[in-house]
Image (tube, rainbow, N blue to C red; front, side, top):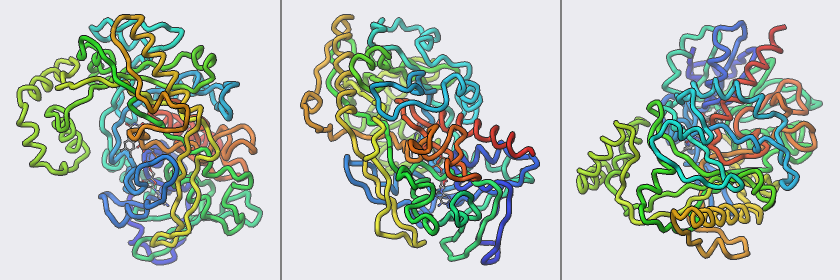
Length: 526
Ligand SMILES: Cc1cc2nc3c(=O)[nH]c(=O)nc-3n(C[C@H](O)[C@H](O)[C@H](O)COP(=O)(O)OP(=O)(O)OC[C@H]3O[C@@H](n4cnc5c(N)ncnc54)[C@H](O)[C@@H]3O)c2cc1C
């Protein structure tokens, strides 16, 4: 059942076996997994079915440090969460990403890739990814392209696929409506998670609507799934028993915020720009668009004492390149939005209709696109160093519900910059050795200070703020995603990642979510 919580009487008390806070990709996946079981499940979702500016404004926050996206725009407060805007690009994390690396402080997951594999397999189906799919160099078996043989001492190929654009809120809505044991409450903003007086058990959560209606939800088990910035925010504001916030006696909640810093690092000069682009955007497999990248070898990471990273060559296109504009328009329609400046964009598309038509044809016959390319640049995306100073805290300002804003300080380190440089330099050397081109590195990357390119961005990936660890002194949740200091609070989503790797996070988030649901089903059987 899906209900607008405004329809309930003021001060209603809802009871459930499991209460999930947040109805995004994680909350919806859990609800589907629990549907038609003996468990009574309640999902509290702040948003409704449609995007509303008032609700979205609850995502306002402050930023400092390395320039970051406006926090109001980089996540979506709607049933389905940020899948309302996402790109569905994904791959499993690399094996090394799960390992404890002596040269990377705070590295090492309590879970291995081998344990994650069956969940990755299941998770692929949830966001419409093609399976079986080889994410390593075997990705090339499906293409009629002979890729350059980069030295394995430095790089290995990694494949990414774009799943179907599944907006979880609309795609899974009907199925959830008819689940008899699942109650989804929309417009339900959780503002406080209340523990008992000795701070080892959650008793209830407080909910308030923008119309001012209040309710309380009591459950045997709670799962916090409100995203990588809101998870720590909610824990920090829930401070009636522990003044420093829920589960925060070791001052870890909100720390270790990680993104995927991504930036152009220099120009690639080659005699055949399209051929070079094909090595990184080779076409489709099973109807899913594929991109490849060159990931740093374990050996190079160890020798250079750097993090993981992936490099790809991208085309620099003239502003408003017709095929690119066409793709953006189609993209908006796939997300059920009318594109901004639609008429202007139609005009831009009509400036080069033959190229657009040719690229549509190439798409249908699974061939790489041919953009009007000015030049090529090398994009590097790195794993960010787990860094306690990169963190979410609370601002003194409050939203209309009286909740303090989150304040995000995005802090990058020398190791982050060193990793970018190692990756770019290795690519340049390999390009020359293979005789496929020349790489000219940007000046900002050659400087020894912590100067960053103005084009450096993240990927809208909010990771690490309630990290998973074996010990309470190193993280907030254990390997089963249970808060170390609580007996009935679990945390799900990318906030539990101890390290971030270089791949988009949601496939791993969904795999961990499936693993958590299996665990809860097993322990709640009794
Ligand atoms: C523009 C964009 C592009 C992206 N592209 C990709 C991509 O290509 N590949 C990829 O892997 N990932 C991508 N992502 C990230 C991906 O969307 C997230 O990893 C994923 O949505 C996380 O799921 P979640 O359920 O943890 O959080 P969310 O989807 O953010 O859901 C959290 C939910 O909690 C609700 N909520 C928040 N606070 C409260 C509260 N106090 N009370 C009740 N409910 C609350 C929110 O309304 C929301 O519905 C992208 C994100 C954005 C914004």
